[in-house]
Image (cartoon, rainbow, N blue to C red):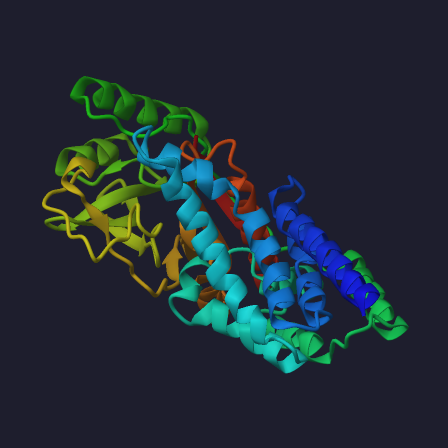
Length: 392
């Protein structure tokens, strides 16, 4: 009896170690590793015989992959933010996601957990590193059908990996290498990376920052037709919009990430199109801005700046827009981590995906790599090329 308990304990410890490695693999600079290996989590959970074992394995996966939240929260909110705030968000989200896997003692239940976490609030609001993203690696270009195929594979998984499963894996890898070719970025479209950091509460410094944004964009955008710029570079005040509009060369379209005032205490994290001779147009709003720091409907702001507790509104649905004759869809910052937002793209089948980010707050945390690798996997599932613009 003692030997059986010892063996079971060693088994779950080994599974937890492997699950933690799978979660951490999302932070590697190789796009395919995290998404491709994440499907192994389903099998690791399935081989556990007890509820607490399934929970422990899943918790190891999510905690290891989202460890960057601890430091990222402190950087985002500033040095005054207590470390426990980041730790609470980290362990809280990992625990909530792990709870669902406690019931996954059958393959069909594992498939339901994947869909539940991806689509049902509040789990859907922080479903990082979802194994659903592995559909982009194994079934590239298949869109919604790829999700169905992946769920069929999950339902077919037994407790033992047999030769049939290995043969199927080999076949899928061969398909990836020999058949699939990603789409081409539209001619003349370009993403512009900037090193501007955040805006600061100093008028002169922000004016200088504003001029640098325009100068660098003009220099890096020569010869392009459509330029994508990073997320929330500035606030969409009339003076800012007028200056940007004047700077845009004739024949170019600038897609600039701006915070757009909607009402007192509420902004949207948006992409605004600027073109000579046309009024600026808000094309995209973030489906779900970063919870707590940006999206906090329980705490309404009194103005339009951070010191007045300004919040950001969630758009929930991100429609495809036609830009210069091309059907484009945007995924703004935190949206790139969430399966429910990517499923909106799968339904609409855009020709190109626009990715905008701010990285200044998350450098050194691993979060940007998790985000980038997730976007790679879902873009691959769509079969659409991706254009990215980052502000560091």
